[in-house]
Image (cartoon, rainbow, N blue to C red; front, top):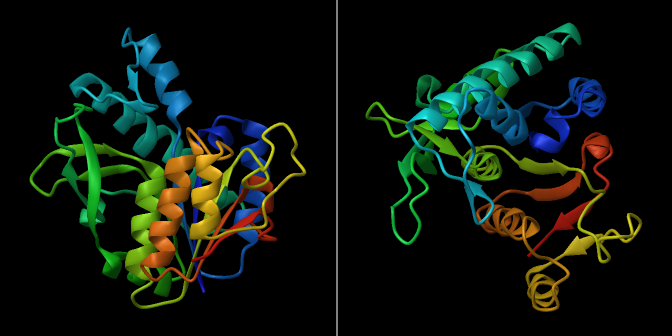
Length: 254
C-alpha cells in the first residue's frame, strides 16, 4: 500500500520533532510520499524582509511578494532541508514542488467572496511522474507550491495537496493517507491528550461539529479526510508525527 504522509509547520518548525519524525519516516518499508507545509518559517522570513503576513479565516493572503517568499521557503529551504536529512538516513528522497513536471495543476481561487491572491485549488495530478519515481525506488518530497499550467505559481494548502495526490494515486494502487500534527489524534477533550477518538464516521462527524468538539483548524482537515475516503482512498489516519509508523490515532471512515 502506498503511504501519503502530510506534515505541517508544527513538525517542520520544531527541529527535535522533525528529526524524530524523519527517523520514523525513513524506516517505513512501503512506498511513500511526503507532503510538507511550513507556515511559521515563511511568516518569520517574511517579517525579516519587511513583509507582514496577512491571514484571513486562518489562511494566508498571497500577494506577489508573499508568493516569492513562500516559494523560496517551501520549495527551497524547507524542501531541500528535508530531502538532505532523509538522504542522510538512507532514503532516496527527491524534492519537488507542484510545478515540477506539472506535478500538481491548480486553478487560481476566485476573488469572491474573499480574495486570497495567488492561492490555488488543485485540479489534476501527474501520477505518471510519481509512479516513475516510485518504480525507481525514489521517495517524492513535495512542497505545496503548484502551477496553473500557464506560467503562474500558486500557494496551495498542503492538506489539500496531500489529499488530491492520495485520491489520484488511489485510482491505480491502494493508498493510505496520514495527516500528522501536534496531537495524538482528534480529541474528545482538547485539554486531555488521552481522549483520542479512535474512529469518526460521517454521522459522528456531524455530531462533533454541532457540539463544538471539532472546530477551527480541525474542520478543513477532517473535510479533506472524508473527501479522500469518498474518492477511493483506502484509509485515512489523523495522528501525531510520533505515530507515523504505528498508525495510532483517529481513523476516518464512511
